[in-house]
Length: 254
Image (cartoon, rainbow, N blue to C red; front, side, top):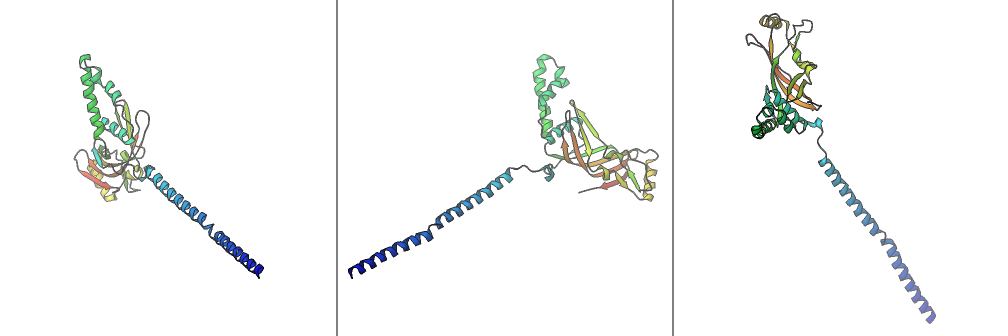
């Protein structure tokens, strides 16, 4: 009887130990799973944050409207102003000190006055550079170089706006060119045949027609000695130079 009791007691203890081991065996793996899930969640959050910071740090592409916030307009700017504008659009520091030294007012002034004249010219140039910041539109007046009427197509050609046309602005040892990116369509002036005859009567043979054109700046291409400013024709007016009579008003885009 004693042996049986001891045996049963031993069996009880062995069963308890086995149960404890079973419980630990079932619950043990859960902790690593929880830690793994937490680490995965942290890594996912860190990755998302890194992606957000990367996107925020990435510069906007030129195609997203690099000049959209430039709302100022220049009307018939002089050559120097267009050179200033080119440097501002291109984001290139203008060589102001070099321009100062090459300015005839500095070169030919007496030595005793040179320092004062140098400061005066530099201030003038810096003011000109500052004045073009935010400029995104131009309005220019020029000869339209109007073709004769083509009855087969029902149109005049404003050859001054052709894609191959270039308006040049030389100043301070630089030459800035201006082109029309939509010139292929902008140059076409559609006119019914009856109206075309009235226009031809107004301007006469080889008539001199002026062009007043509104332009939106769309791009800039830097180059040594001055680059190219690309523009889009928005609208234009044509007038007879002799009488000043309005011949046509054309709106291309808003």
